[in-house]
View 1 (cartoon, one colour):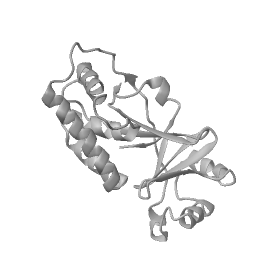
View 2: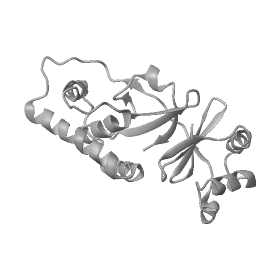
View 3: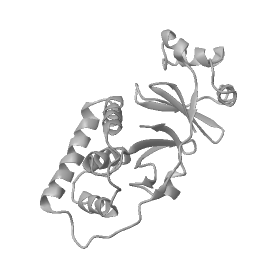
Length: 217
């Protein structure tokens, strides 16, 4: 379950821990053990107006401005983890032009992550995906081609980089996708992946289920 507190601020429960993601500042952190029960109670009661102790913490931590408090609430949304795309090996790699375009998407995404804010990149993803038509069914061969050609690009794999690059590479040739960010409390880690409503595109369900989703774009 993901709770959206403000457009830039989301939360989730990872076991007993409460974790917040501040997309505007590109940071996530664990709420203190003293405050976590108050946040869990707030969520359990429906997440209306924030109790004073939580509002004060959010302002003190510079997660929200005082002017934001009137809009502050906790809106819950479930997130389901779909099955992985069936594995399919190809007899050949992508054609040269296809591999070159893939390399361009990976390199372009790598540069964008170093020069643009994550909030901006995910906002662009949200706008592009919402404008996509339903699109054709995703062909497993497309993903197999991506992963095979990706090995030839001399940039280290990274879950965020590759989720964004794969999404850009698929373009409008597949159904709209969602980028999901998840976290764990012990150890304190973040991970992300790309999925459609019915398929997990670049990871395995057993792996991503270790993470509590905290953002879906």
